[in-house]
Length: 249
Ligand code: PEP
Image (cartoon, rainbow, N blue to C red; front, side, top):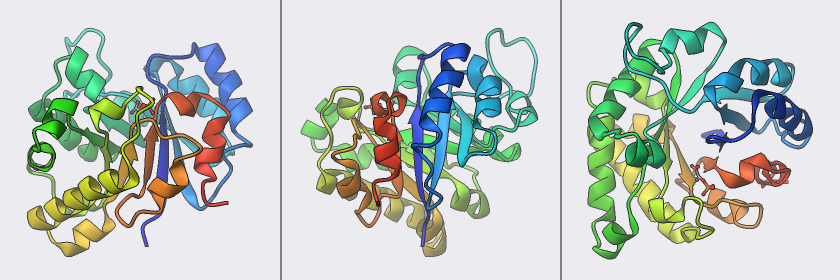
C-alpha cells in the first residue's frame, strides 16, 4: 500500500520571515501522520523553514536544484547545499521551469540522476498543454517525458521517486482535470514505469496529481487507484492546505 504524499509548491512566494509565520500557522492544520507532507519553498527560505517545521510532520523540500556538484554556475543551488541542511525532496522539471527557464527533458534527467546520487527524492513533473490534449497526444507526450526523465535511473532508485502529473492547462488556472482524466494519465504513467522496469517498481512509485487541487476536489482525486497524493500550488499557501492534507478525515 503506497503512502500518500501531499506537497506544497510555494513557487516565488513568501519572504523568509513570512515563511516562518506561515509554517507556524499551518503546522497544526497539516498534522496527519497517514500522509507524507512536504513544503517546497524558495531556496532562501529553506533554512528558516526547517527551523520552523522542527518537531512537526512537515518535511521541507526545494523547488529546484542544479545538476553539477559545484563551480561557476552563478545563481544555482548544488545538491550538497540541500543535503547539508537536511533537504529530502526536490521538485524537478516543473512546467514553469520548462517554460521560463528553458528546462528540457534532458536537463530534467540530469537533475533526477544527481538528486538520486545525493539521496534526495525527486518530485519529477510532467504534463501536457491544452493544445496537446486537444490533439489527442497527451499519453504519447507524457510517456516520452517519463522515458527521458528515467534514463539510467535504476529500478531501486525509481521505486523511491515521486512523479507529479500536472496538466499545464490546470496549473494556477482554477481548472482542475476531472478525477477520471487525472487517473487515466496517472495509470498510463504507472504502465510506462512497468514497461521500463517491472511491475514491482510500478507498484511502489508514487504518482501525484497537480493542477488547481483544492479542499473540494482533493478527496475525489486522491481516491483514484493510481493517484498517490498531490502537488499543490496556490492552495498550499492557505489554511485550506490543512483540509487537503486531511482529505481522508
Ligand atoms: C503547481 O504549482 O504545481 C500547481 C499545481 O499549482 P496550482 O495548484 O496553483 O494549480
